[in-house]
Image 1: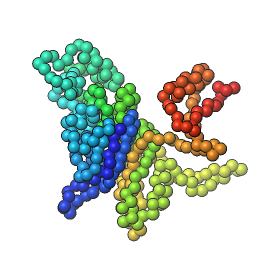
Image 2: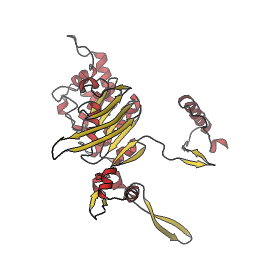
Image 3: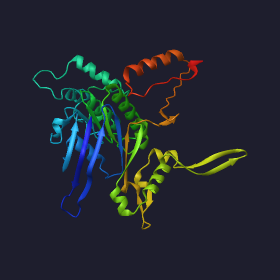
Length: 358
């Protein structure tokens, strides 16, 4: 588990440009989570990753990883268990070396070097098998200098390199930002596959809300209450604006003959997919419009999609489409998996219903 406790980070201390970026900031990532962090430029997304990786040190506070305090641990020692993919494809690989040489260097991270051969046929075949998962034909270009590859190919190699050893945390710092839309889509699919296969805890910074929503499960808005008070903003109004932008808000009723429909207003799907809080404005008490990013930021964390109640008891419903399958067999397999992997707290239980009962 990764924990940041009471982190304070200030830039340009003692000058007129002094900026308090984090003030008693707390942040937790559970083991196995894929957490996405979204925010405007300058909101501290990359600084957060730098604090985790050891590139920057906080003024005060603690960074706890795997139950150990690593606050004062230098960056190169943290790299033993933390893999990182940067925004620039050139930063994660060596352009003058071949694909094979880049893979071999990463494979020998944290190992003692001798004067023997750096690779052998067995390891080369292993590297090829990793590259095959990318679906880019990189396994057939092992002897090509990485500098001759496209940005998407280099970033895919950087991702494989960062995760090929036994790491406990994968850091993705806007790793699709410098790529074209098609390459970004491909890289995110590779990312999802790597994370799921290795079951590695992942922290991703992105400006693409669709990627964040697709690979996460719950959106959390964080408010800067000091700035909200300074600007005289009504927090209920701020909540309504953000809720309307993302989920929609009922603004009226439409009647069609005897039928009645709620009229819901929200941003169109395209704008929601790439929503930038710099482009969403709210009015202050003085009538000045400011970007919502001035007073809020967005994180994505794991959690239940919805919790409702049945006979005063909390209930979460999971629906499955088992078309063309043996329904009874599917239910039996689900029961076995849940019984094996999930231990419920006292008072909680599973119930099964649907067509298989008929």
